[in-house]
Length: 485
Ligand code: ADP
Image (cartoon, rainbow, N blue to C red; front, side):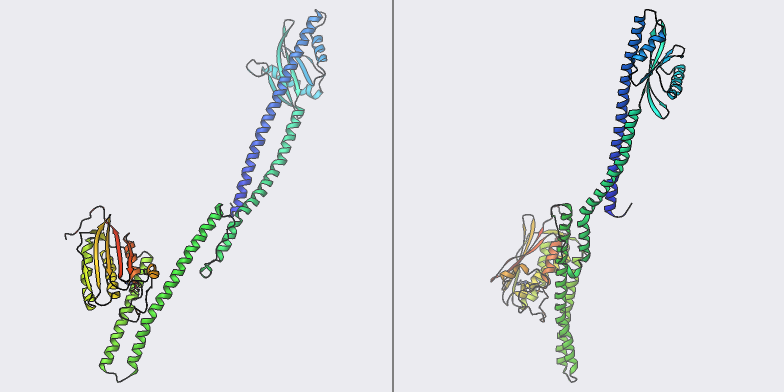
């Protein structure tokens, strides 16, 4: 089988057409042949009836003056205009009288009839009295009928040439032999052009797709007809390219932002080390100061690298959740407790309102990381002597944890972007060279953690009076085995 779809379609098409034509030709050939034989048979029967009626009439009219042979001869004479040969045999199979026939027919056909009579195959009541015979390459149809005359039994055999039927069937066969191959050839050509035309968009699409690479991801396949199957295929391919382009763009931005964020601490580290080494006579305090800067920057660098690593693993699905049963409100209270020192340093009031029991089966370590991050942000962006409050609720099948602060809030136009990677609403407020300044990855990681638990994390309120981040997670419908609180 050829590998090209076009060639395969053409072969199948031509094969199907050839099969249909052959079956049709065979059926019409057989039907026409049967019909012509039926017509000859009925004509033979009619002419035999007429012949026998003439013989009986001759016998009646002769009143014994003529012998049987003369009567048969008179009947043959009367029916001589017909192209039918009549032969009469006596009961012993002996030829009594026959029409003038060609010597060849007489020799072969009459002998054959005599032979058939002798073997008793003619005129047997159970057999049809019709036979098809061949003589000198021609077909004849024979009909035999027994009759009584002057008290003796005879057999009349009528023969009719099938020459014209034979010629018609031969002409029909020749026509088929010519027309069928021609029709199959035309069907093959038609099928080939049809397949070529139908598949040309596929060839075009594959040529276009071949030229699309990471450098020209903006290119799209040209769609001529959007509604047909190939148009829909091209549409799906273009949408796939849209998604690819989008993720390439995200990836590119991610790499650019990551390298930008990494460059700053690395530059500070190398700059500070150079300064420390440039002067030979530095005091121990100066060295201590430099080392402290190096420590803070390397800590910051480590954090960015860890966050990047977390997000990359999350993106490729390599950060599986390690679930365990625990009480969510206890985890939140514990996180609040851990952040007290941070809050105290800024004289911020940090409080957690009393909460109902919130049993949950989730990744405790990841949720802890998320709450610490949110609390850290709340404290970081709240000015001294401000307040941060945390509430836990069980509401309409979900657990809601809200962390509210009295910070400056996020400008309205930037609120939708706070969960983007490397996004910082006000870079001057969170300078990346300060120890506290983050790289803008914290909220992206928090949102991934919430979504990995089929929950949500939203900035539910932000204004001049502060911001509120709300985490929502579906409450379990069946209670797993929880540790006693
Ligand atoms: P960062 O490490 O810079 O804090 P995050 O992803 O945690 O990164 O936060 C992204 C940005 O969202 C921050 O730079 C800040 O502009 C804004 N933001 C986050 N939390 C708060 C908050 N509680 N109050 C005001 N702005 C916030």
